[in-house]
Length: 151
Image (cartoon, rainbow, N blue to C red; front, side, top):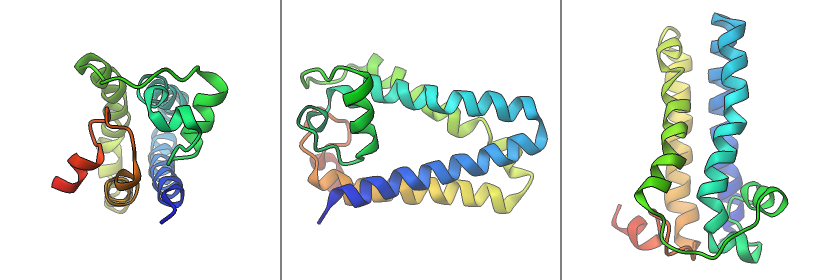
């Protein structure tokens, strides 16, 4: 199985979900939409810097998400893999959780958008767990294959 296809698909689904959130936030207020739009790349760069930079796949150019590996290679210097600390995990994931949670109130006003947003994110997560994790060599990852098999 080519894990890159599942990695690219999962990123695509996340970006479609974020596009839905942007649409709704821009329809509520230009300022809300603009702030959210500026925050999206900053949050992803934060995750890539803290999490992806240490992945063994970033070091050997075999990133399962392809795009994130390219960004690490171009913007950041990959570092040697070692276990992530709780602080690093929180610093990487907390902004991502906020990015996902922030538009929920306004998405709820249009249930189709709300459920589409959540469904796309859930499907993307399932694709990562079932399609990307089993081929991953990053034993420091909180979602390493041993963890994924227990889910």
